[in-house]
Image 1 (cartoon, helix red, strand yellow):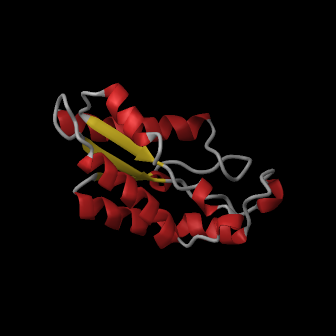
Image 2 (cartoon, helix red, strand yellow):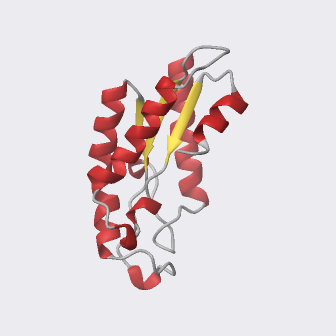
Image 3 (cartoon, helix red, strand yellow):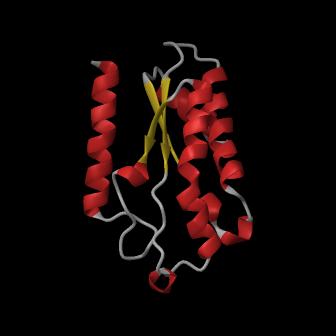
Length: 144
């Protein structure tokens, strides 16, 4: 929330803001449920909508729900994630989609096009490529 206004100001004018976050909010020590994680995205959408743009208008927002974590935590080197984290990531998409609808945002569930790689958390090259392709398709369709 601190950096978002700086990014909006420094990159203006903007046609589109892509907001893709949430996985780190699922870390076990935060004890957040999917609704609270999505509320963070909701707050950022509100900030984007109400920011006082001085050049150009208010940009469209594309809200991206994160990929789901993999189930095999024995392969995950990140101690901040546990089975509750996995469950949280698997439940996020409907909450993010509701937030997107409330704000009239475009929405993409990244878990529909990409999966976690060997470390059970991050995408590998093919996942990044698939997500990029899905984002490009949505953006081309919206701005054609």
